[in-house]
Length: 233
Image (cartoon, rainbow, N blue to C red):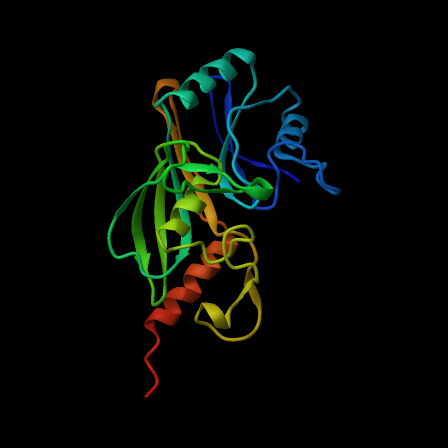
């Protein structure tokens, strides 16, 4: 697999990670391939991981090609020097911006959940803005202001707008063209519809954007067509 390089700045390399690809090797059978190893082979150099996104999340992912660049990136990611924007397809109509301030804690089987009354958790904030509203779904922008595991997915579910497909936190079955407003039983969406659209690290001169991948573009086209279709009488 050839990875698409979006930008190279000062020892940092930003790629457009396809959905289904791990960032680092996993432990399950068949998890040997990962973005770090593919990029190292592609560039012919050692690669450091600057941050991670989930296996099924597509979009911007940043690596370093030197220890110095890796340290600088770590300082930016650990502080407030990075701005990320994700796109997500969620259930229901998100009519107005949301500021989700919900502390999270670890749950079973590697999941996260909102804290219950009296529990301590990790402070977590996500800003959500509707980009395009359909009949019963919304394409939203999500800007995580903290970096908790599965933060966007858990916050959206807590707000009553889970991702259209989410094997850990919502619907497990894939979505067909008919279910998205089109026709036929063609499977269109099998993964969590979350895409890391952009990432900015001003202190390091990095600003990069990844286009919406084909499967999510197809979903949006079908949702638009369904929203525009006349209601049967």
